[in-house]
Length: 194
Ligand code: 5GP
Image (cartoon, rainbow, N blue to C red; front, top):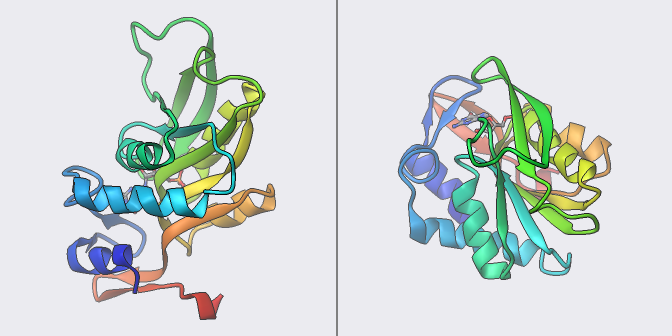
């Protein structure tokens, strides 16, 4: 079991066979020391990808993305889910459906911070159906920048997200890959079972 899988087993709460709550270190309270380790893991996995910038989405993607950005010494940009009073010109937008909230959100970034030709690493807290990830990739494409890959903290491998991203030719690096979960326990994909 890696450091994140261990933490999920110790502190994660399985709300149903599809929803995991990790409020103690990622989705509500943040454990900075632990997030630093997550950031270093992403930096290590993408060290040969010549990343210029990290793109994530508010709010739970920000902590892991910032620690990865610190380690990789690159800026971190987060897409907004709500319209901002100060973010009103030169916007790139994409539409993202949230299965957890059952609503369609328009996500946006300013063209000022996402430039043609930039090499972008996309980071998010969870990968489930891949909607958020594909929306972020659309923002990068619309800006004529390049998606170098996805760094995911927790992937629920029993949902379709990874497959959708891989079908589009993207590299996906998830630190924990949940194979199955229930209130009785959580099982992870292991290298040898892939
Ligand atoms: P997707 O767009 O891949 O369907 O879902 C990813 C987004 O939904 C993530 O950004 C995350 O915020 C949220 N999400 C999906 N599944 C879970 C889950 O099991 N637990 C938590 N805490 N968030 C989730």
